[in-house]
Amino acid sequence: MQGNLNGERLKKARIYRGFSVSELAEKSGCSRQSIYMYEREKTKRVDLNAIEALARTLDFPERFFCESDMKAEIGSTYFRALLTTSSRYREAQTQKMEFLADIFVFLQEYLEFPHRTIPDCSGQTPEEAAATLRREWHLGTRPIENIVALVESNGIIVTKFPVETNDIDAFSQLVRIGDEDIYLIGYSENKTAASRVHFDIAHELGHICLHGWSEDIEKIDRDEFKEREKEANEFAAAFLLPREGFAKDVAVNPKSIPAYTELKRKWKVSIQAMARRSFSLGLITMEEYQEIIRTMQRRGIRKQEPLDNILVTASPTLLKTAVMMLLTENVFTPQEFMDELSYNYNLSLYPKEVESLLDLPNGTLEKPKTVYLSNLKLKE
Image 1 (cartoon, rainbow, N blue to C red):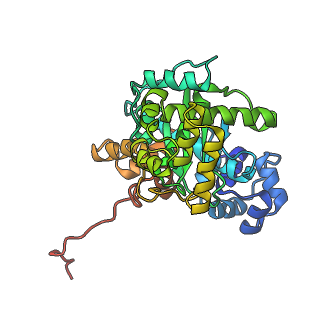
Image 2 (image 1 turned 60 degrees about the horizontal axis):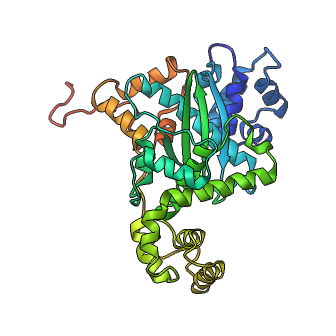
Image 3 (image 1 turned 180 degrees about the horizontal axis):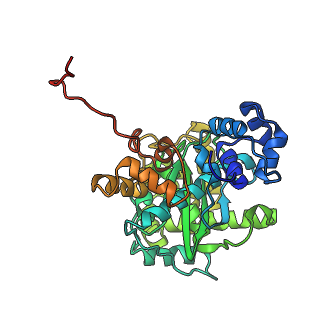
């Protein structure tokens, strides 16, 4: 290892892997005290063998721990399940978003990405803000076929993330690098039904349009957090099911589960969310809405709704396409891409890590293997 240890980098790698200091100490064979000292840079004496063991355990290149950080300022992070999800999972996902933002800054040097178009919705109700965003994005009152592609086309980074828990549905984050604000939305790859993914992403759009990003969300009042979640849900419903378009469709039979099932094909929204929207639009009473939910519960279709296995949404493609374009247009070889990320953007990761972050096919960024033609042989 060359250069001085950056303790903050060690901490980031540990958080990224979801390890506590004690767990990392046990897995690496290093003492807890040493790890604490390294992370806080309380010592100038660095045991190179210990750093090698930590790098091996965390599966990061040793160079990563010597690099200075990009000047990224992490803003607020909105988690839908903040009150039930462990801080360890939240911190790990937040760290992944920071790495994604760093990679995005690199890619922007070579490619022109869609311009971010988020209107000023300050002072608006969730219903008004949803209508404002629909106008800004020229959606009219029609259904949204693919919310992932829609959001990406309007300059917001979307990513799927693997998690070991079903507690995290989705989250959104602001990362500020220099003068640029980068909004990112992540959603769990455990959720594949289009109706669930659409609502999760629309919910995060609600936070982006409606709420502040300068404060620590984990420190706000519990009731205030619940109110923001309620507003984001109302925004999502209004954005996905606009009053004029949806009310016209549902008014024919607003109390029928089979009717909602057919509408689900068109609107890509869950039966339960459509029934709730019908209530908020005054098309059914609270008692009628609750009866729909009770009926679904009795039939065993509340957690796994009809069409959930059929209606699926596309995966994010913006960053993946960007990397593949640079490779296919011979701007970089895979090795040159990784070197550029490491030496000019201070983000030394193994190829498999970048592939995982960007959902690239395995081996995309690996060094090409030498191929020998079968009709040639070495001289004896």
